[in-house]
Image (cartoon, rainbow, N blue to C red):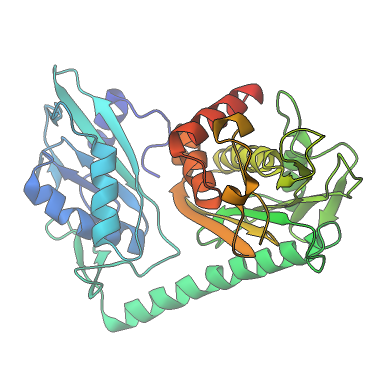
Length: 395
């Protein structure tokens, strides 16, 4: 990308202005007014449909040439610019794009720069205006983006198909291998599947050996993601197999692929509802949470280490859970009636499209939202429990 160092500073912006005029991969806007906000879908989608690029708001340009002094624009006191950009993209770009948003302080009091970094997208073509218009970059300072012709749109559609098919193959292969330790045919054994992957895995992010080294070396304060001596080589990466050893050890499969897929299959332990003297049972949700938290932390570290800062797709599904009591928080919060927590379907799932930055910056909110989709305690109590468990794990 244009900005090679993070975090982006005022000096970085000045250096970019000295090196780049407007064109194929760079565009400047003097302020973030209504007109610029209206143009944002065209600009962002055209970058993603071409070679990626950067929009710097707070820099005036004349005939495509940035004009000093570089002072930024007056910031609105209560506006969350990253949220504004995200909402504009989600409403107006199809499929959505989530650019990396950076707010940089100017040396003029009260002024800021807004930097939007957009990667070339394997999801192209991205369309706007009710999904009818596809824009690409032209490289011209006078007209930096323009409508794509039919042949180019056909090429973009073909470019999207290959990584979609690869992601599907990676998921199916990981799921098939996980059956060695988490068999699907035993309906009395509930289990969870968790996958995190680039939305469109076009190219390897690393080598298979590097995927092995990453999985082998990742450690946490209280426990690692995988037990010692459980590692195995698999096609395109590495995996860990842990066979069930009741009552304490449940079957678990974890895989890391060089294409950026992080996958886990985990059996649920079944525990007493309220102490060993209570014959009623519930699923042990700590099995899910611990694996989910560790996998998301690993995913963030893996993507950052290998230069993937774009969007990722998270999917969590719980299987064979019909009739099971599913409670995440302590028993004394709601009383002792498991009937209030019985699941009425055999499959429960949650899915999120997020950026790598959001995995780190919004971890507590993200995990709370996901767990609230899978179980039924009040969100405030759920958030407190999630926060407590994150702290306990040193994450």
